[in-house]
Amino acid sequence: MKIGDFGLAGVLNAEGVFETSASLGNLIYMAPEIKKDSLASKKSDIYSLGIIWFEIFSDFESISERYREIQNLKMNTKDAAGWSKNLWSLLMSMLDENPSERPSAERILAVLQAKGDY
Image 1 (tube, rainbow, N blue to C red):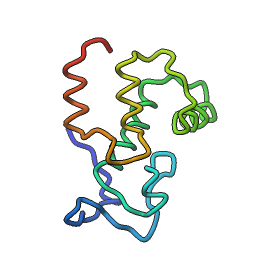
Image 2: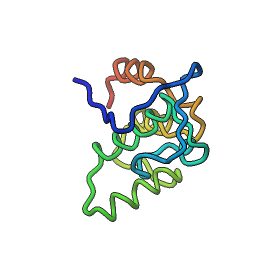
Image 3: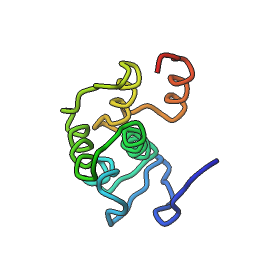
């Protein structure tokens, strides 16, 4: 199964970067480089996936708690309580400020398949 939001679709240039003159999308999921330079790449999607992954595997009491915890995660002030060390490490690499330091989708899959202690 594949899910996509074609309302935000665009064409990548030769370097695999999508340039936009407008900030499209929900700010809570937006990678830092999009907010800063309006440049998106596959690594920007990895950042967004990390936020979604955090939401899926977290239990929030309210919308305000969800927002606060995501902000803490982005500022690297969230603790790893309830997360395995390996899963937390992978999540934090997905949210790296530097897009080139984020893992590829293939790397994420390989790590998940190789480690059975989640």
